[in-house]
Amino acid sequence: MQRTPAFREARARKLEKYAPLADLLRSKGYEVHTDALIVGALGAWDPCNERVLRTCGVGRRYAQLMRRLMVSDTIRWLYSTL
Image (cartoon, rainbow, N blue to C red; front, side, top):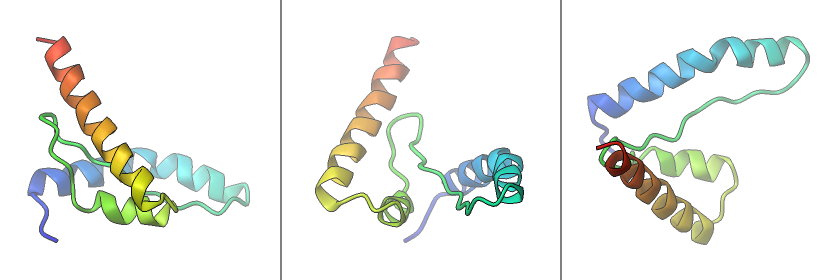
């Protein structure tokens, strides 16, 4: 799946942002996996989000609902700020 540079950059920023927290939790003995769900400002869905949802064990039907809710909330938030 091809991703836009903006999605790649957003994912990298999120991973970098939460890396210190993940390291802290690892140092306390927790098993930690980090990733991000990325939705563009206009509601674009990063195809790599599908892998994240599968990794988290989110079922196909709930993933579909989650996708719709995340995109619609993003769009709703955008228009509420105009």
